[in-house]
Amino acid sequence: MPARPTAQEKAETLAWLRRISGDLATVTIKRLEDSLPWYAEMPPARRSTVGLVAQAGISSFIQWYDDPTSTPWIAADIFAAAPRELLRSVSLTQTLQLIRVTVEVTEERVAGRGEDLRESILLYSREVAFAAADVYARAAEARGLWDARLEALVVDSILTGEADEELPSRIAALGWHGHGEVAVLVGTTPPQFDVDQLRRLARKLGVDVLIGVQGSRLVLVIGRADLPGREDATAEPLPFSEIAKRLEPGFGAGHLVLGPPVPALIDAGQSARAALAGFAVATAWRHAPRPVEADDLLPERALAGDSVAKMTLVERIYRPLQAHSTDLVLTLWSYLDNGRSLEATARELFVHPNTVRYRLKRVSDVIGWDATGPREALILQTALILGSIGTEVTRRRPSPPRRG
Image (cartoon, helix red, strand yellow):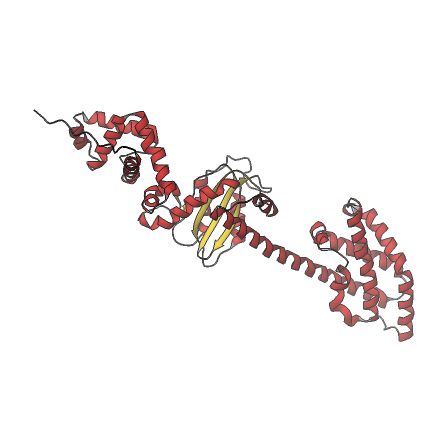
């Protein structure tokens, strides 16, 4: 262990260090330009700021060598010269490279001045490295809290439909990688919610997510994205229903409702409104799958007063059938009124059961719903009721002719 210097020797060393501090700073900046490509490529203003940080480090070391009890103030002494923007443009790795170069130059210059001084430099550089890590950790924590608040604000704007001209810039600030279609998934928040795990899972599926936790409700805005490091990056994109199924473990117990896809993130409010409306009435479908699409809950949503659901049922079912053939509407009404019985429908309409089968198949071809299933029958019957109420003149089915 090196011998401690006398008071006079230490005073002489301090005086010498103060004399060469300017030269040390100059040589350090020259070494940074020669050995660190990222430093040489920086704009002049930022390069000057980094140089000020290096000079502050040298000056702070001299003060610390004079009074080692000043260690807690190292971070404030050195990084006070760096504006907040510098923390976003210079990474922690680059900062540690800066410290290493500064220490190397200082060690070379003080070589031969005694082991005590060299040991002090090493001890001080360790303290500075820890101080730098602490500064960046605090900045990351503050940025994380800010990002979480901004993300919550963006999700809330989407849910309430109060998007403004600032929404795109806020989304960009969050690093959103999504492009193309977007869908909103609504469920319950699990007791132990791991947001990072959910993001990792979404990344593996090739999607980006915005996450909003609103008490017991968890909302995900999902958009397809080309993310670096994604597995199976060349595979066909998954449908949103499959994405929702794979994200399902990240939600708590209860219903999970997927809104319909919309063309872009700016339109996500439409998907969100449908998902929220479906989530509010999902308990009315006793055997609803998990996840369930909001459009599969159209009857429950319509009964709850959802105007979008009512319009969707009329536009997708009633009007296409009416425009195609009144026989299809009449057959569907009769089939549903007669408990989905082919024979009873055929008797009422005075046609062969095969004619009823053919017309029901045409119904399925025109609108995509099959009346022979109990769940889809409920959807179709609700659409017929709403369509009939919405017409200007109430259309009554003609009574079957009396047999002579």
